[in-house]
Length: 284
Image (cartoon, rainbow, N blue to C red; front, side):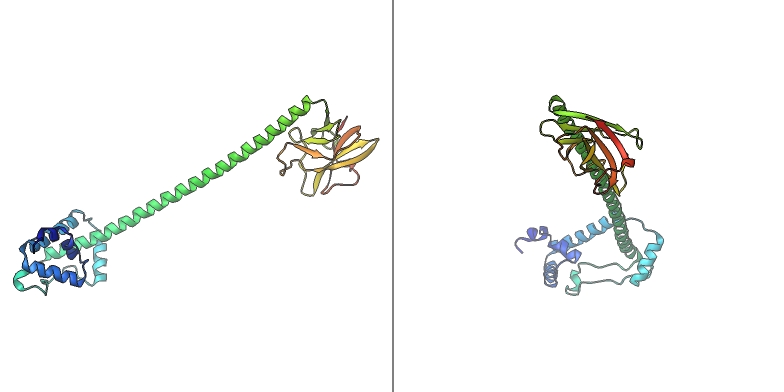
């Protein structure tokens, strides 16, 4: 063969020893080995290298692992192996022959058990890696939750800041009158501010300056304007309005008013105020 060195360095012989060639390719290697001493020497060197690698990386398994493994394979612990020849080669060109002694069998046995032990170690390593990834995923989820909470705080601050900006503009304008309403007998500590525009008669309530008792699910607050001694409804509202992005909520406009009051009414409001539920009240 003209380019024998290139053939040896091609990797075909390694695949042959590992059993990864097709039957036709393996037959070609055997025929060339019968013709060239260099190929026979290279095959022997590859086998010795693989055996040394297996021995150097072997892991001593527990005794019961070896016993159970060979029981499943149907191999006795002290069995010996007969010589194995490659049938397609003549007797004088043998490539591989396992010697008939227990030392060789034990070498192969330890190599096989070492591979299984390495597989078990790899499985354990994968399990540990999976556990770490799961823990990292939980931490990321926790960070996302904290981020959402922080975003909520920022949104609330922006909400309050916008309301304060509006209040500053209203206080600087002479068109707006501020009616400070104080708590009544049912809730002495309650307080609330109403803003009434003298020009366009708009009415606003200020959530930032509101301190009212919490209403249950069946009730809500109703704003009233006292006009010539008679109450006029200006609309209902909750203690907080989650749908509003502003700290100020616009109610119904009123042309004239001598006072403003808030009562606790059933959901949807009432035609007339429930005086027993009068919460805050203030004069213009």
